[in-house]
Image (cartoon, rainbow, N blue to C red; front, side, top):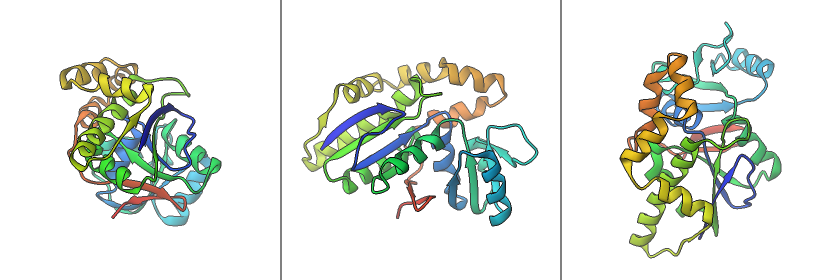
Length: 232
């Protein structure tokens, strides 16, 4: 099984895991505990229309009266319903780009909080390649997404050893794995990242703690038919 890590643009025709650690992929993973489905959207006007159509909760990073809640795993845990509409800066764009390039690609959403179960499902579903796609910020590298990818890869390696599955890690996958081996270093790098600094400035310091948790939930989000749902 080939394991690769890429930034923003996906190339696989097999299975992709989208990672936007601070905060979209963590928020999505948490939200599926209280919502049946999530609709990722990139156009604000369309998001508002969908909110009205589905009588849904609208979450996002834009300061507007049309949004019910921020893209926050802490805040979103206080909401529940059938449908959550989610508009973010980076993560939802990556999901949409992958489907537009190849609608047959299996797309999971991964974070540190559900790393082990995502790793297991990815190995179960993929035919010969798993690509971990770092959302980044405005198509630029972010250390927290690299760490998120590395945590998932470490789980894949452990599972592969138990099940005698051969993994072929690309250089980017090896680098992500190495940088994520030490929990204390992980915490330090996430806490001192530009994204974390911005979240603290905006008053979302609690989100950083949630997004740094490892293997705390078993939810595996899958994106298909324009919805994100929990994979059974």
